Length: 482
Image (cartoon, rainbow, N blue to C red; front, side, top):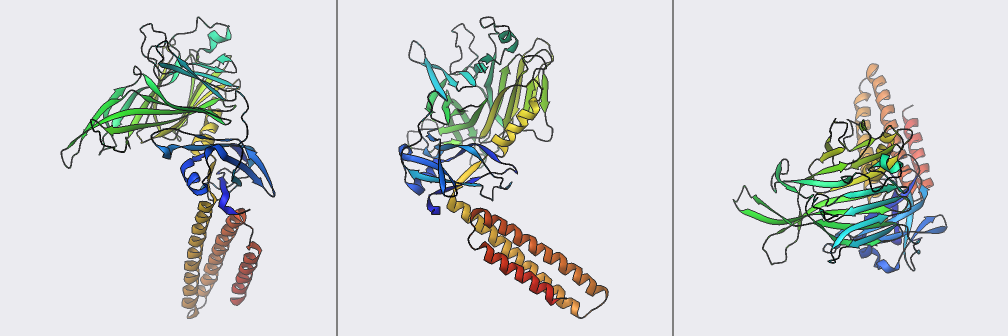
Protein backbone atom coordinates (compact mmCIF):
# COMPACT_ATOMS: atom_id res chain seq x y z
CA UNK A 1 0.00 0.00 0.00
CA UNK A 2 1.46 3.39 -0.92
CA UNK A 3 2.46 5.58 2.02
CA UNK A 4 0.85 8.66 0.47
CA UNK A 5 -2.59 7.83 1.92
CA UNK A 6 -1.63 6.66 5.39
CA UNK A 7 -1.76 8.03 8.91
CA UNK A 8 0.71 6.73 11.47
CA UNK A 9 -0.84 5.92 14.87
CA UNK A 10 1.48 6.48 17.82
CA UNK A 11 1.04 4.68 21.15
CA UNK A 12 3.39 6.18 23.80
CA UNK A 13 2.71 3.44 26.38
CA UNK A 14 4.52 0.16 26.99
CA UNK A 15 1.24 -1.78 26.74
CA UNK A 16 -1.41 -2.33 24.08
CA UNK A 17 -4.05 0.41 23.84
CA UNK A 18 -7.26 1.21 21.99
CA UNK A 19 -9.47 4.29 22.20
CA UNK A 20 -9.94 7.66 20.55
CA UNK A 21 -7.50 9.69 18.48
CA UNK A 22 -7.79 13.38 17.61
CA UNK A 23 -5.71 15.42 15.18
CA UNK A 24 -5.94 18.65 13.24
CA UNK A 25 -8.09 18.26 10.13
CA UNK A 26 -6.62 21.06 8.00
CA UNK A 27 -3.26 19.37 7.17
CA UNK A 28 -5.08 16.15 6.28
CA UNK A 29 -7.44 17.93 3.90
CA UNK A 30 -4.53 19.79 2.30
CA UNK A 31 -2.64 16.52 1.83
CA UNK A 32 -5.42 14.24 0.56
CA UNK A 33 -8.07 16.68 -0.80
CA UNK A 34 -10.95 14.56 0.52
CA UNK A 35 -14.09 16.33 1.76
CA UNK A 36 -15.46 15.52 5.24
CA UNK A 37 -18.59 14.03 3.62
CA UNK A 38 -16.48 11.49 1.67
CA UNK A 39 -13.84 10.67 4.28
CA UNK A 40 -13.34 6.98 5.05
CA UNK A 41 -10.71 5.66 7.47
CA UNK A 42 -9.54 2.04 7.58
CA UNK A 43 -7.33 0.34 10.17
CA UNK A 44 -4.70 -1.46 8.07
CA UNK A 45 -3.57 -4.88 9.36
CA UNK A 46 -1.44 -6.80 6.91
CA UNK A 47 -3.47 -7.26 3.71
CA UNK A 48 -6.80 -6.47 5.41
CA UNK A 49 -8.41 -3.14 6.31
CA UNK A 50 -11.14 -2.57 8.90
CA UNK A 51 -13.40 0.52 8.65
CA UNK A 52 -13.20 2.97 11.56
CA UNK A 53 -15.77 5.31 13.06
CA UNK A 54 -14.67 8.89 12.36
CA UNK A 55 -15.96 12.47 12.19
CA UNK A 56 -14.76 16.04 11.64
CA UNK A 57 -15.82 18.68 14.18
CA UNK A 58 -15.94 22.43 13.50
CA UNK A 59 -14.76 23.85 16.85
CA UNK A 60 -14.81 27.53 15.90
CA UNK A 61 -16.48 28.67 12.64
CA UNK A 62 -14.19 31.72 12.63
CA UNK A 63 -11.00 29.63 12.75
CA UNK A 64 -10.72 26.63 10.41
CA UNK A 65 -7.32 25.73 11.88
CA UNK A 66 -9.20 24.38 14.91
CA UNK A 67 -11.20 21.84 12.88
CA UNK A 68 -10.62 18.39 14.37
CA UNK A 69 -10.59 14.87 12.95
CA UNK A 70 -11.48 12.31 15.59
CA UNK A 71 -11.62 8.54 15.07
CA UNK A 72 -12.04 5.46 17.22
CA UNK A 73 -9.65 2.50 17.35
CA UNK A 74 -11.85 -0.47 18.25
CA UNK A 75 -8.84 -2.82 18.37
CA UNK A 76 -5.79 -2.30 20.56
CA UNK A 77 -2.53 -1.31 18.90
CA UNK A 78 0.90 -2.50 20.10
CA UNK A 79 3.24 -0.52 22.38
CA UNK A 80 5.39 2.23 20.92
CA UNK A 81 7.79 4.65 22.59
CA UNK A 82 7.34 7.31 25.24
CA UNK A 83 8.53 10.06 22.88
CA UNK A 84 6.06 9.14 20.09
CA UNK A 85 8.91 8.19 17.75
CA UNK A 86 7.69 4.65 16.88
CA UNK A 87 4.60 3.90 14.79
CA UNK A 88 2.23 1.34 16.29
CA UNK A 89 -0.38 1.07 13.53
CA UNK A 90 -1.48 2.47 10.19
CA UNK A 91 -4.77 4.03 9.17
CA UNK A 92 -5.67 4.39 5.49
CA UNK A 93 -7.29 7.64 4.34
CA UNK A 94 -9.72 6.98 1.49
CA UNK A 95 -12.68 8.44 -0.36
CA UNK A 96 -16.00 6.64 -0.10
CA UNK A 97 -19.13 6.26 2.03
CA UNK A 98 -18.47 6.80 5.78
CA UNK A 99 -19.45 4.19 8.36
CA UNK A 100 -23.06 4.78 9.48
CA UNK A 101 -23.68 6.06 13.00
CA UNK A 102 -25.39 3.97 15.66
CA UNK A 103 -28.57 5.86 16.52
CA UNK A 104 -28.48 7.85 19.73
CA UNK A 105 -24.91 7.07 20.75
CA UNK A 106 -23.74 9.69 21.59
CA UNK A 107 -26.22 12.57 21.25
CA UNK A 108 -26.74 16.24 22.03
CA UNK A 109 -29.94 18.18 22.73
CA UNK A 110 -30.29 21.97 22.82
CA UNK A 111 -33.03 23.44 25.03
CA UNK A 112 -34.49 26.86 24.16
CA UNK A 113 -36.47 29.33 26.22
CA UNK A 114 -39.80 30.92 25.24
CA UNK A 115 -37.85 33.84 23.79
CA UNK A 116 -35.85 31.54 21.52
CA UNK A 117 -32.69 31.92 23.62
CA UNK A 118 -30.47 28.86 24.06
CA UNK A 119 -30.72 28.06 27.77
CA UNK A 120 -28.95 24.74 28.10
CA UNK A 121 -27.49 21.68 26.41
CA UNK A 122 -27.89 18.02 27.32
CA UNK A 123 -24.97 15.74 26.42
CA UNK A 124 -25.79 12.02 26.48
CA UNK A 125 -24.37 8.58 25.82
CA UNK A 126 -25.39 5.17 27.13
CA UNK A 127 -23.61 5.78 30.45
CA UNK A 128 -23.65 9.50 31.13
CA UNK A 129 -26.20 12.34 30.96
CA UNK A 130 -24.88 15.85 31.61
CA UNK A 131 -27.18 18.88 31.78
CA UNK A 132 -25.20 22.05 31.11
CA UNK A 133 -26.50 25.59 31.75
CA UNK A 134 -25.79 28.49 29.42
CA UNK A 135 -27.73 31.10 31.43
CA UNK A 136 -27.03 32.39 34.97
CA UNK A 137 -30.59 31.83 36.32
CA UNK A 138 -31.97 28.60 34.84
CA UNK A 139 -34.98 28.58 37.21
CA UNK A 140 -35.77 32.30 36.78
CA UNK A 141 -35.88 32.62 40.58
CA UNK A 142 -33.27 35.33 41.08
CA UNK A 143 -30.42 32.88 41.76
CA UNK A 144 -28.19 34.05 38.92
CA UNK A 145 -24.90 32.23 39.54
CA UNK A 146 -25.22 28.99 37.52
CA UNK A 147 -23.84 30.06 34.12
CA UNK A 148 -21.37 27.60 32.65
CA UNK A 149 -22.13 24.82 35.13
CA UNK A 150 -23.49 21.28 34.95
CA UNK A 151 -26.37 21.16 37.44
CA UNK A 152 -27.10 17.48 36.88
CA UNK A 153 -24.77 14.59 36.10
CA UNK A 154 -26.26 11.11 35.92
CA UNK A 155 -23.97 8.09 35.76
CA UNK A 156 -25.85 4.92 34.84
CA UNK A 157 -29.08 6.94 35.30
CA UNK A 158 -28.32 7.91 38.91
CA UNK A 159 -27.36 11.41 40.05
CA UNK A 160 -23.73 11.93 41.09
CA UNK A 161 -23.79 15.48 42.49
CA UNK A 162 -26.35 14.71 45.24
CA UNK A 163 -25.68 11.00 45.51
CA UNK A 164 -27.29 10.21 48.87
CA UNK A 165 -30.62 11.86 48.05
CA UNK A 166 -30.55 10.13 44.67
CA UNK A 167 -29.89 6.74 46.32
CA UNK A 168 -33.07 7.22 48.37
CA UNK A 169 -35.05 7.86 45.23
CA UNK A 170 -35.35 11.60 45.78
CA UNK A 171 -35.29 13.99 42.87
CA UNK A 172 -37.38 17.03 43.79
CA UNK A 173 -35.68 17.35 47.18
CA UNK A 174 -32.13 17.29 45.84
CA UNK A 175 -29.97 20.27 46.78
CA UNK A 176 -30.80 23.15 44.39
CA UNK A 177 -27.21 24.43 44.66
CA UNK A 178 -25.60 21.28 43.25
CA UNK A 179 -23.34 21.82 40.25
CA UNK A 180 -19.87 21.12 38.86
CA UNK A 181 -17.61 21.97 35.89
CA UNK A 182 -18.19 25.67 36.52
CA UNK A 183 -15.55 28.33 35.93
CA UNK A 184 -16.46 31.16 38.26
CA UNK A 185 -13.46 33.44 37.72
CA UNK A 186 -10.71 34.17 35.21
CA UNK A 187 -7.39 35.81 35.92
CA UNK A 188 -5.82 37.39 32.85
CA UNK A 189 -2.10 37.99 32.81
CA UNK A 190 -0.45 40.94 31.09
CA UNK A 191 0.17 40.96 27.35
CA UNK A 192 3.88 41.56 28.04
CA UNK A 193 4.21 40.03 31.50
CA UNK A 194 2.54 36.61 31.48
CA UNK A 195 3.80 35.48 34.89
CA UNK A 196 1.50 37.37 37.24
CA UNK A 197 -2.26 38.10 37.40
CA UNK A 198 -3.21 41.40 35.82
CA UNK A 199 -7.00 41.43 35.68
CA UNK A 200 -9.83 39.39 37.22
CA UNK A 201 -13.28 38.84 35.75
CA UNK A 202 -16.21 36.81 37.07
CA UNK A 203 -18.07 34.65 34.56
CA UNK A 204 -20.52 32.70 36.76
CA UNK A 205 -23.21 35.36 36.23
CA UNK A 206 -22.63 35.94 32.49
CA UNK A 207 -24.57 34.05 29.83
CA UNK A 208 -22.82 31.83 27.31
CA UNK A 209 -23.72 31.52 23.64
CA UNK A 210 -23.56 28.30 21.68
CA UNK A 211 -20.85 28.82 19.03
CA UNK A 212 -21.02 25.40 17.35
CA UNK A 213 -22.04 21.84 18.01
CA UNK A 214 -21.71 18.47 16.32
CA UNK A 215 -22.85 14.93 16.88
CA UNK A 216 -21.30 11.94 15.15
CA UNK A 217 -20.48 8.30 15.57
CA UNK A 218 -17.52 8.99 17.86
CA UNK A 219 -18.58 11.89 20.07
CA UNK A 220 -20.99 14.73 20.72
CA UNK A 221 -19.31 18.09 21.17
CA UNK A 222 -20.14 21.75 21.60
CA UNK A 223 -18.29 25.04 21.77
CA UNK A 224 -19.62 27.83 23.95
CA UNK A 225 -18.35 31.38 24.47
CA UNK A 226 -18.90 33.75 27.38
CA UNK A 227 -20.32 37.23 27.06
CA UNK A 228 -17.59 39.63 25.85
CA UNK A 229 -15.64 41.47 28.52
CA UNK A 230 -13.20 44.34 28.16
CA UNK A 231 -9.51 44.14 28.90
CA UNK A 232 -6.72 46.69 28.50
CA UNK A 233 -2.99 46.65 29.01
CA UNK A 234 -0.17 49.18 28.65
CA UNK A 235 2.81 48.49 26.41
CA UNK A 236 5.82 49.23 28.68
CA UNK A 237 8.01 49.98 25.65
CA UNK A 238 5.81 52.46 23.79
CA UNK A 239 3.36 53.60 26.46
CA UNK A 240 0.47 52.71 24.13
CA UNK A 241 -2.66 51.31 25.74
CA UNK A 242 -4.35 48.36 24.08
CA UNK A 243 -8.11 47.86 24.45
CA UNK A 244 -9.41 44.35 23.76
CA UNK A 245 -12.78 42.62 23.68
CA UNK A 246 -12.38 39.11 25.09
CA UNK A 247 -14.36 35.91 25.38
CA UNK A 248 -13.77 32.65 27.22
CA UNK A 249 -14.22 29.68 24.89
CA UNK A 250 -15.02 26.23 26.25
CA UNK A 251 -15.13 23.12 24.05
CA UNK A 252 -16.86 20.06 25.57
CA UNK A 253 -16.73 16.53 24.14
CA UNK A 254 -18.60 13.42 25.31
CA UNK A 255 -17.40 10.22 23.64
CA UNK A 256 -19.47 7.12 23.01
CA UNK A 257 -19.59 4.99 26.16
CA UNK A 258 -17.43 7.39 28.20
CA UNK A 259 -17.88 8.25 31.88
CA UNK A 260 -15.93 11.48 31.45
CA UNK A 261 -16.16 14.79 29.58
CA UNK A 262 -13.16 16.36 27.85
CA UNK A 263 -12.90 20.16 27.90
CA UNK A 264 -10.62 22.60 26.10
CA UNK A 265 -10.27 26.23 27.29
CA UNK A 266 -8.92 29.32 25.58
CA UNK A 267 -9.52 33.09 25.72
CA UNK A 268 -9.90 34.84 22.37
CA UNK A 269 -9.36 38.60 22.15
CA UNK A 270 -9.86 41.19 19.41
CA UNK A 271 -9.03 44.91 19.34
CA UNK A 272 -12.01 46.90 20.56
CA UNK A 273 -13.73 49.48 18.34
CA UNK A 274 -11.70 48.41 15.35
CA UNK A 275 -13.71 47.72 12.21
CA UNK A 276 -10.75 46.55 10.18
CA UNK A 277 -10.17 42.83 9.77
CA UNK A 278 -7.80 41.81 12.53
CA UNK A 279 -6.83 38.32 13.56
CA UNK A 280 -7.83 37.33 17.06
CA UNK A 281 -5.15 36.52 19.59
CA UNK A 282 -5.18 34.06 22.47
CA UNK A 283 -4.48 35.56 25.89
CA UNK A 284 -2.73 33.98 28.84
CA UNK A 285 -5.25 33.21 31.56
CA UNK A 286 -5.78 31.19 34.74
CA UNK A 287 -9.19 29.61 35.35
CA UNK A 288 -10.76 28.94 38.74
CA UNK A 289 -13.23 26.05 38.90
CA UNK A 290 -16.10 25.72 41.35
CA UNK A 291 -18.25 22.73 42.31
CA UNK A 292 -21.00 22.05 44.84
CA UNK A 293 -21.20 18.28 45.36
CA UNK A 294 -22.28 16.05 48.24
CA UNK A 295 -19.28 13.76 48.68
CA UNK A 296 -20.26 12.92 52.31
CA UNK A 297 -19.44 14.85 55.48
CA UNK A 298 -15.87 13.56 55.36
CA UNK A 299 -14.90 13.32 51.69
CA UNK A 300 -11.62 11.72 50.72
CA UNK A 301 -9.44 14.03 48.62
CA UNK A 302 -6.57 12.49 46.67
CA UNK A 303 -3.66 14.49 45.28
CA UNK A 304 -0.24 13.37 44.15
CA UNK A 305 2.29 16.04 45.23
CA UNK A 306 4.69 14.86 42.52
CA UNK A 307 2.08 15.21 39.75
CA UNK A 308 0.02 18.38 40.38
CA UNK A 309 -2.05 17.82 37.23
CA UNK A 310 -4.95 15.83 38.68
CA UNK A 311 -6.92 15.17 41.83
CA UNK A 312 -9.89 13.07 42.90
CA UNK A 313 -12.57 13.39 45.56
CA UNK A 314 -14.87 10.58 46.62
CA UNK A 315 -17.20 9.24 49.26
CA UNK A 316 -16.30 6.31 51.51
CA UNK A 317 -20.00 5.53 51.93
CA UNK A 318 -22.44 3.84 49.60
CA UNK A 319 -23.12 4.59 46.71
CA UNK A 320 -19.38 5.55 46.62
CA UNK A 321 -19.70 8.34 44.07
CA UNK A 322 -16.63 10.37 43.13
CA UNK A 323 -15.30 13.07 40.84
CA UNK A 324 -11.89 13.35 39.22
CA UNK A 325 -10.24 16.26 37.46
CA UNK A 326 -7.16 16.17 35.21
CA UNK A 327 -5.42 18.81 33.12
CA UNK A 328 -2.27 19.60 31.16
CA UNK A 329 -1.89 22.80 33.20
CA UNK A 330 -0.81 22.41 36.83
CA UNK A 331 -3.53 22.62 39.46
CA UNK A 332 -2.29 25.36 41.77
CA UNK A 333 -4.51 24.48 44.74
CA UNK A 334 -7.65 22.60 45.75
CA UNK A 335 -9.89 24.19 48.36
CA UNK A 336 -12.52 22.50 50.53
CA UNK A 337 -14.09 23.71 53.77
CA UNK A 338 -13.81 21.48 56.85
CA UNK A 339 -17.38 22.36 57.82
CA UNK A 340 -19.33 19.07 57.74
CA UNK A 341 -22.28 20.78 56.04
CA UNK A 342 -20.17 22.51 53.42
CA UNK A 343 -20.20 20.93 49.96
CA UNK A 344 -18.14 23.55 48.13
CA UNK A 345 -14.98 22.70 46.22
CA UNK A 346 -12.75 25.04 44.22
CA UNK A 347 -9.43 24.75 42.45
CA UNK A 348 -7.17 27.09 40.53
CA UNK A 349 -5.16 26.39 37.37
CA UNK A 350 -1.82 28.00 36.64
CA UNK A 351 -1.67 30.48 33.72
CA UNK A 352 -1.46 29.35 30.11
CA UNK A 353 -2.76 30.14 26.63
CA UNK A 354 -4.96 27.03 26.63
CA UNK A 355 -5.90 24.15 28.87
CA UNK A 356 -7.09 20.62 28.18
CA UNK A 357 -9.13 19.20 31.04
CA UNK A 358 -10.98 16.01 31.91
CA UNK A 359 -13.99 15.70 34.21
CA UNK A 360 -14.41 12.11 35.44
CA UNK A 361 -17.56 10.78 37.14
CA UNK A 362 -17.26 7.47 38.94
CA UNK A 363 -18.55 5.00 41.50
CA UNK A 364 -15.79 3.13 43.28
CA UNK A 365 -16.88 0.55 45.89
CA UNK A 366 -13.19 -0.34 46.23
CA UNK A 367 -12.49 3.35 47.00
CA UNK A 368 -9.82 3.49 44.29
CA UNK A 369 -10.77 7.02 43.19
CA UNK A 370 -7.13 8.02 42.92
CA UNK A 371 -6.20 5.07 40.70
CA UNK A 372 -9.05 5.82 38.33
CA UNK A 373 -8.28 9.55 38.10
CA UNK A 374 -4.54 8.96 37.69
CA UNK A 375 -5.11 6.42 34.91
CA UNK A 376 -7.43 8.77 33.01
CA UNK A 377 -4.97 11.64 33.38
CA UNK A 378 -2.18 9.51 31.90
CA UNK A 379 -4.14 8.08 28.95
CA UNK A 380 -6.27 11.06 27.92
CA UNK A 381 -4.27 14.14 28.97
CA UNK A 382 -0.58 13.34 29.52
CA UNK A 383 0.06 10.54 27.01
CA UNK A 384 -2.92 10.25 24.66
CA UNK A 385 -2.88 8.19 21.50
CA UNK A 386 -1.80 10.38 18.59
CA UNK A 387 -1.71 10.23 14.82
CA UNK A 388 0.18 12.06 12.12
CA UNK A 389 0.46 11.94 8.34
CA UNK A 390 2.79 9.08 7.46
CA UNK A 391 5.30 11.24 5.59
CA UNK A 392 5.83 13.30 8.73
CA UNK A 393 6.40 10.12 10.70
CA UNK A 394 8.97 8.97 8.14
CA UNK A 395 10.69 12.36 8.24
CA UNK A 396 10.97 12.12 12.03
CA UNK A 397 12.44 8.63 11.77
CA UNK A 398 14.95 9.83 9.15
CA UNK A 399 16.05 12.66 11.45
CA UNK A 400 16.47 10.19 14.30
CA UNK A 401 18.51 7.86 12.08
CA UNK A 402 20.74 10.73 10.91
CA UNK A 403 21.36 11.78 14.49
CA UNK A 404 22.31 8.21 15.43
CA UNK A 405 24.71 8.00 12.50
CA UNK A 406 26.27 11.30 13.61
CA UNK A 407 26.76 9.94 17.14
CA UNK A 408 28.21 6.74 15.71
CA UNK A 409 30.68 8.69 13.58
CA UNK A 410 31.85 10.72 16.58
CA UNK A 411 32.19 7.54 18.62
CA UNK A 412 34.33 5.94 15.91
CA UNK A 413 36.61 8.99 15.77
CA UNK A 414 37.16 8.91 19.53
CA UNK A 415 37.88 5.18 19.33
CA UNK A 416 40.50 5.66 16.61
CA UNK A 417 42.20 8.56 18.45
CA UNK A 418 42.35 6.48 21.63
CA UNK A 419 43.82 3.55 19.68
CA UNK A 420 46.52 5.70 18.03
CA UNK A 421 47.50 7.34 21.33
CA UNK A 422 47.81 3.96 23.00
CA UNK A 423 50.22 2.56 20.41
CA UNK A 424 53.18 4.43 21.93
CA UNK A 425 52.49 3.04 25.39
CA UNK A 426 51.92 -0.34 26.86
CA UNK A 427 50.93 -2.02 30.09
CA UNK A 428 48.26 -0.10 31.95
CA UNK A 429 47.52 2.24 29.05
CA UNK A 430 47.03 -0.70 26.70
CA UNK A 431 44.68 -2.36 29.20
CA UNK A 432 42.69 0.88 29.52
CA UNK A 433 42.47 1.07 25.79
CA UNK A 434 40.88 -2.38 25.47
CA UNK A 435 38.38 -1.46 28.21
CA UNK A 436 37.55 1.82 26.45
CA UNK A 437 37.32 0.06 23.13
CA UNK A 438 34.82 -2.48 24.45
CA UNK A 439 32.66 0.28 25.97
CA UNK A 440 32.65 2.22 22.70
CA UNK A 441 31.86 -0.91 20.74
CA UNK A 442 28.94 -1.73 23.02
CA UNK A 443 27.70 1.84 22.71
CA UNK A 444 27.81 1.66 18.92
CA UNK A 445 26.00 -1.67 18.97
CA UNK A 446 23.21 -0.20 21.14
CA UNK A 447 22.81 2.75 18.78
CA UNK A 448 22.50 0.51 15.77
CA UNK A 449 20.08 -1.86 17.49
CA UNK A 450 17.86 1.05 18.53
CA UNK A 451 17.84 2.45 15.01
CA UNK A 452 17.06 -0.92 13.49
CA UNK A 453 14.19 -1.45 15.91
CA UNK A 454 12.64 1.87 14.93
CA UNK A 455 13.09 1.14 11.24
CA UNK A 456 11.64 -2.35 11.57
CA UNK A 457 8.50 -0.92 13.14
CA UNK A 458 7.70 1.28 10.17
CA UNK A 459 9.22 -0.68 7.31
CA UNK A 460 10.85 -4.10 6.95
CA UNK A 461 12.48 -3.30 3.63
CA UNK A 462 16.23 -3.71 3.70
CA UNK A 463 16.44 -4.59 7.40
CA UNK A 464 18.05 -7.99 6.97
CA UNK A 465 20.70 -6.52 4.67
CA UNK A 466 21.56 -3.82 7.17
CA UNK A 467 21.72 -6.33 10.02
CA UNK A 468 24.17 -8.47 8.09
CA UNK A 469 26.27 -5.41 7.25
CA UNK A 470 26.54 -4.26 10.85
CA UNK A 471 27.18 -7.76 12.19
CA UNK A 472 30.08 -8.11 9.76
CA UNK A 473 31.30 -4.66 10.78
CA UNK A 474 31.45 -5.50 14.47
CA UNK A 475 33.07 -8.91 13.82
CA UNK A 476 35.73 -7.25 11.63
CA UNK A 477 36.56 -4.59 14.21
CA UNK A 478 36.60 -7.11 17.05
CA UNK A 479 38.96 -9.38 15.08
CA UNK A 480 41.34 -6.53 14.19
CA UNK A 481 42.26 -5.83 17.82
CA UNK A 482 42.62 -9.39 19.06
